[in-house]
Image (cartoon, rainbow, N blue to C red):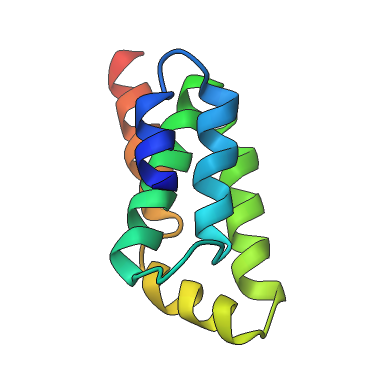
Length: 99
């Protein structure tokens, strides 16, 4: 549900979309799967790109995943393993190709 909200409001309300995606990325939700976490992360990065806050969001997600040892954060960390940082690299490559 939160990923759908993030996707549906991405163009019209990117701040709201980002908040919705981050809520799910933090393990909020009912019966959240690793696919839900990855999709929420992708929607958060899409919204951050539209808001020109990709570096801030990448840092925030990295800190969130690294700083908390709760079971839900371990689940999120495992779901996002190898994903954090990858998105910012692909966004930077797009920006570099436009220059």
